[in-house]
Length: 115
Length: 110
Image (cartoon, rainbow over all chains, first blue to last red; front, side, top):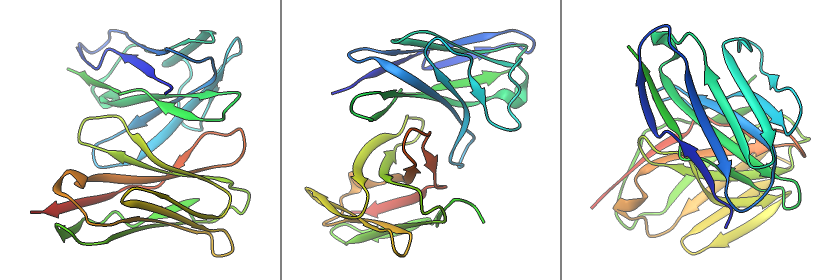
């Protein structure tokens, strides 16, 4: 089946630094990538949608200059949290969608802790 | 009104019980209905996927979609302690991102 590899699975960084999270579709072409954030005991909230080769579309309230999304190829999308603050500590999850089968496949998630 | 409503629970049942999980939604344009299971500190994994209305069965799991009532359900038969997790419904229109319910936390005791 379709697999999305997300790295790193967890990361601790200092306030003010930047962190990059990668999502790779291993055996299919991900025409669309979705990035979600999940706070403890809450559901997944969509942050942004990115289509390969296009600028990402951000949900209301999500700072595009803080959460940089790059989807330069059909198998790789990255989310960079810039100038991270403790309130950015969360579980970040990507989801890739195939164009053909319209399936959604999720990465295993990245737990970010900003200290 | 939120687009997807799900009772967060928690829900506690004994092993072997039948579990019923539900979500309601407000947008009649939704066509894709999923149920995901999420263990603590892990990403969600797809359990069931239904397009449009109807029932779908996979082992101990049955998903139902009632578009006229805007209501979806997931039934778990013969529940096991390993079923203890958070179950999230997720719904989408064609070509859009999934919208998730809050998730229901299920605990199955042996």
